[in-house]
Length: 562
Image: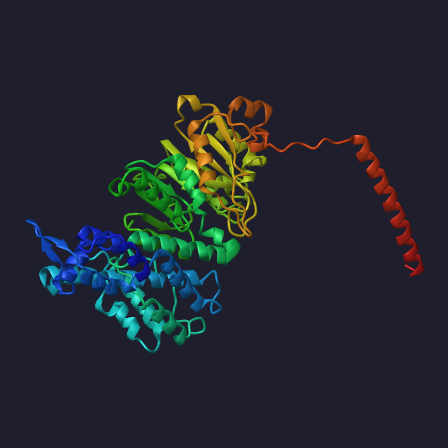
């Protein structure tokens, strides 16, 4: 850290303004002013306005003071090492939630201390500094991180007690965040292991003056990705590769005040990507006007998503727990499904055990005009839920297994009904092996209930199966691959061997509502010419060889008297 700072300072003047110091060290102006009040810094005052100028001695003080700050790479490595402390003690698919829980606890405790100190520095009033309205999260005195630092025995039980008190003090904001954590199991968490874990997190201050929301949020996303890789196939249950989310969000282009919903929210990546996309295109103020909603069936994954939103400063994101197909949480004042501007999802693929009997009751109108999805496959149940959750002007982007494009039976009939309603705007074939532990190729379906005139009764097919960076265990999309897909969608024109606009008439009359992308786009592979007579000759030779081998085997069996 110090080497990087000194490198930045090489070409800078001896006297630095408060803005320059703030940018170099990545700290807020108020933090510098507070240090000045405490006598830690004594900058020069120059000019009529008495502007601050920081001398080399001040810079050295700041360097020492900031010695505990971390870069993103250092933070990522530090957090991943915390997982090493638990690795082998509990199942790899479980320990992520314990690491995330401790990280979040450390963050809100350190931030509370900063908020308290800021009010003390300004008003010197302890009661005012403790007031609820001066804190984003409430951290009771007996829940501070220093309490768990000083705990020598029964650390696990103490952590459970602290999490229960934090939940009560911040209800309903933190309801169920810590419900899936039980540190008191001494077989999983011996006291010495928890002591090491607490000591590890105690090395650094996780307050916002030291680690801003973007930095901590990026590190948290890195952890989610690493845990997904570590969990293999199970990792796909809570993590969608960010490149795929980026493709969909760049296509849907969230706008100011949009209501965005993910019915299978996982770790919250789609919602976060929506926010980051709009912030990049406009600014933070406009991005904060988005209304974000998500539902997740798994308690541990629900907590991951909630924490992800909090660490990125998206406290208003409405994340709820429950089975979307049986118990949808977002309803309007009449008890019908709430509808949204944008719906995004990566639902679990082809699950066989789903509440089909409840779905069949059509309580939420998801079957109006559509056949019932098959009993042993929920893919189209999720699709119908998404369609019903779209406003009349709504759009959606969904990641699904390729089978939804061509499977027959009731799924084929539902697909036909969707196409006749002209709801599908684009079908994108994605490369295989983009997900952890899942080799099957996936597709992206873009739905639009209010197609512009030039897109009505047409579908844009995009074949992106060949555009990716190959990895040892997992493939990935490069920026150029993402841009190629998004540009093809935006330009809305044929691109040889990559994109083609197809009339519904062709899909209906010539292909019986089959949406397999290769039916509409030549994949560019030259078909090998087959010499039929030569192949026939080879087959005859193989048959003769097999007859000779069979004869020899029969002879051996006879010798062995079988």
